Length: 273
Image (cartoon, rainbow, N blue to C red; front, side, top):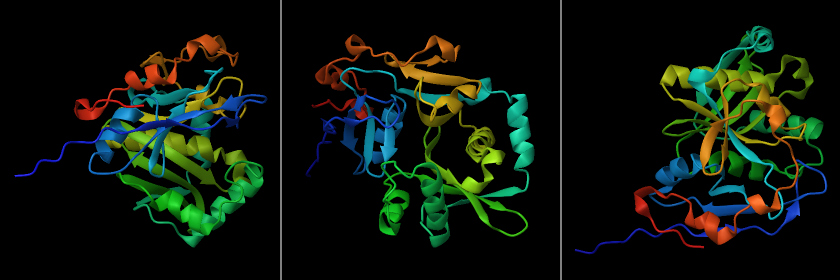
């Protein structure tokens, strides 16, 4: 009988490039491939350690002279609605939710293009075509869903979230919405609805990606009660957002080899750099 030993994931570092969140900074990412039979377990384990998924890759910031980006998630039990969030729910009461398999459609792509052209025309995804969009939605080796929000009266697609289902929560991989409905706070609404989905399914967390103090693009995340951030190898309540700043912290970023050595892998896989 032939036995196959598990192959430990290999970790790599991207070349520095301009940071999309803070001016005059350079970003660098630590990443590994997400593939094979252990993909689900690896995604669960690394998501709990501040990693995010992009198609078949898991990554987290590993900048040489900055540690501003902090992975964020909402503790569903600790969350309570604010007055403004209650108003957001009322403004979007006309929307209906539908969950589908991760399959891209022309209607989704049209909404995606409108969103990018209005909100992120100079971003890294600005030139994404329909084939690249389909890859973003469909290339997932794990349990993923597309959560669509449509107008109950006319069926018009209004907002979309590509969402991974983890063993301890929901991870909102990427969301987009009708930019002409900015007064309805659709981004906030989708997070609120994911909190409700997590409650309905008994999942304790909703993962939101990265919160970056000092970045206007990411400031809205700190307005959710029950928010936790991943720092120093553990999750901590955010508490006062004003206590965090975007100052450079060059000595707080561990060397790459040390970062990799401290990653906990499922099934006690050894780490390699």
